Length: 181
Image 1: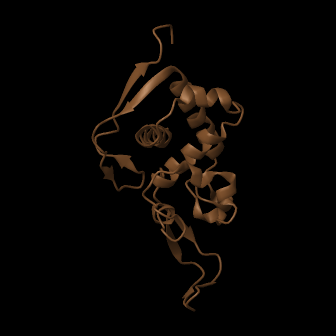
Image 2: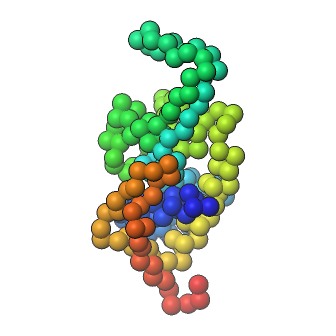
Image 3: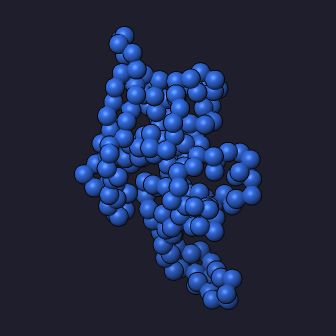
C-alpha cells in the first residue's frame, strides 16, 4: 500500500541521515529473527512521520477532563497522532531522530498510548503486523545488499490525511559489491 511505501522511504531517509555505521555488520551481530535495532528504527520513523496523522473516534461515554470539563457521550473527537508523537512532555527533543527511544529499557515508564502510529484499542489497524514485518524485511534485505544515500535536500511535507513528501523522497542506491544482487 502507499502508506507502507511512504513510511519505508521515510525510514530510509531518517536512518541514512542520522546514523553512521555499517548496517551489514550490525545485522550479522543482531538476532535475525527479531531485528530489535531495526524495529526501534522503524518505530522512531513512524513516530516522526506517522503514515496517518489524525484519527476520529466517537465517545461511547462522558469523559471528564483533568480540568473538570466534560466531553459528552456521542461527540466525535479528532486525535492527532502527529501531535501525540511530537509532544515534548512525552518525547524530549521530539524532532530529533533517536531510535533508542524504543529500547525496551526506555519504554517502561511511557504510556502505551504515547506511540499510536496504527491507532490503538479495538479499532486499530488490522494490517499493522503485516506492515511492520514488510518494512523490516524490505529494509533489512536492502541494507544488506545496497548502500542507500539520502538526497541533499530535506523533503517538504504535505499535511494531508496520509503524510507524504512533496515531490516524493529521493534516494541514491548503489550495490555494496560487484557480484549478483
